[in-house]
Length: 439
Image (cartoon, rainbow, N blue to C red; front, top):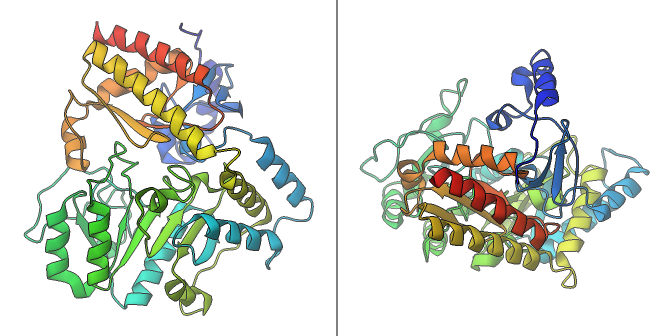
């Protein structure tokens, strides 16, 4: 049933924001919200409410961090208690040690840990470390994968697919103006899920490649799962050529499994980056890796700094999150899997009944919905070729009118505070919206 949806106050705030904030927002991703970027005033559990009083079942969840639901009491209490003692010491404190020890118990490759504040920072540290350790310069990344907004890697995340070169690589396409002219020279860009392209590039450039960085699941593009054996192939290729494998687990970390994609797929990366779900909504990112590699940071050979790294609030949240994830009694990851799979199955049933040609794919705790006329999507190119983005935008807008907030990029997140009643309401709304679109 449609709710009376007005965005008048949000519109007033947005127009006001245009006079003081560039674009009226603080992340360009938020410009995609319709009918304009909205302002929110409170969120709890699975629900979020905007300034116009519209309440939504939320599947955006802060773009992924809200794994425990909005405003989880156990994290708020941990942060409040820790904050009484201070916020920044420019020195060490026990919480960061305890948080690191907790991460080591969960993450397969976490022999040593470093904290930062954003996923972009963690990726930059991983690149620097990989180049120092291998004494090589080039990094392989994949078309359609996002690893932060820095000059060193913001290429081919949303570019029109171009032709492939003789070695299987793709010409770099910068995703913003203002990139350093030399930035692209250190990158080799490949199509994902393509075994032969990996083999070809390593054959021609093996002595130059410091590392391969990959989202182990292409969450930023249609939640594309790796083909059977593909991640193993990347790992084997890196090992044979003395290159490092970096897993970007900014989205998959702690969400697809308590130990992230490394645990889910049984593959131990040389380095891995985490953020989003690591602190349940507080800003933190994590670099984990093998002791031999990470020790180059510890010795000072590789510089890594940051005033806000391991601040008291974020470390309290991270420690609390890790303890929560470790509890078999609570079973966060099983809850996420069960809720997500139920929602996916329901959407698939609606799609089958109405013959809509939708594609619903992903591991459950995070998944993607797109309109592809029933065609498979297994890499960025098939995503661009087959996905009807205008149709999905209509779906998003109509779902908002029914009190269901979903991401304009097609990615859906669930939290442990979602209920099966939320799922039922969402599926009822989706059925009504899709029936109207089908007719």
